[in-house]
Image 1: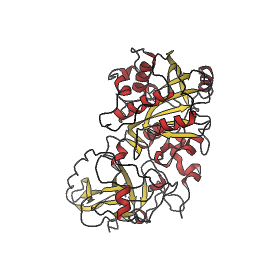
Image 2: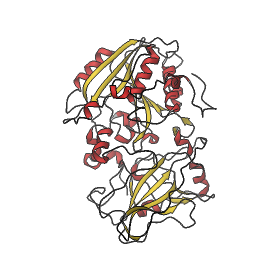
Image 3: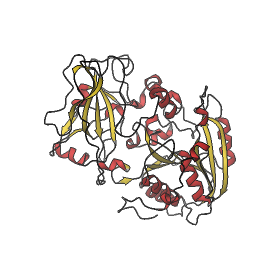
Image 4: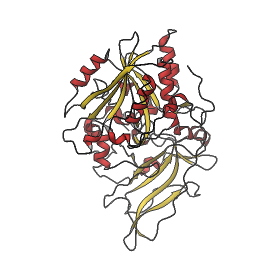
Length: 466
């Protein structure tokens, strides 16, 4: 019987202790995950090795884009869930046919595998790993065939509520030739007539599976709700994502007009770390802080890694309860947002904060500045009045939705928090000379105010303006 992963002891999700997913990512993986579809393998000597193979199989062709399917609700769960099969008809609805959806990778280990790297003392798999893991019997007992010959996983993978209803694309393992050369061998591909299974090889301790989410996952967290963006209002205990943000805002106002933006501030800081490397000193996070007309709170808007909060326990630097066992932000998050972070994709977050004005926000920054806290050198790099004619809260949400839908990628060099913050500050204030905070990010910077104002090219059925 699986325990809820929301009740885990702190040492069972030790990656959360790094303070920010970027810091864990650098420590655990040593580099970016890379472009979609590459992933990474465990290089331990006893893992993923097959003896006696001669040459690698050909790689499968890259997936092509597909249209977004109608909305279909996904299972809600906070624990791993395996073995309960859906009918082929149900699976066809939950996982519509078509390429273009987000690609995920997971390590499937033998039932007898007991490495403390991924297993608890009682032998169960540690939940919600950044790279998901599952036992072979659990994973393969959760596969269902559709009428059109696709094999789909319908459980909840490694305790991640957002990783459910996924099409199995391939199974691979690290193999070794007779000459000792190591390569990646494909054991199963989508379209094979044989049923996928864990190889009957006593020396094989694990395989990697490649999974594809439904086509709509390329543009939104849920079917029929495009836009990798969300808004969190802690006072109302409200979190809405995608185009649903506009409806949620309208409902919260109860007929009153939406508030208008008054002043914008460009914020920059480094992440706190007891021992900074030379690279750490060059890495600055940027966001835009907004003050409102007639409202006693500020709003912070930032672009960051896709899933960087849902995949990291809801531990946001902008809320006092970040280090609580279960932050209020995490409690407010729907299952669709709880998935491993993706360092090559982006999301935009709109946070209403407790600070009533910039002065109180600066006091919050000061209280959390230091090597063992959250921030280094927090700086308000620029401030100006908001000059846009369309400057309501609804307009801000629409700008953010358009921006993230026009380009979903994340890049350290050219598409990151600094380029977004510079673009948003320039849009709101009319100061089009605004640039990324760090000189290194200015080199490849290209302003994209058009992304805020224009629907994405694939948005023939975009929601009407608020």
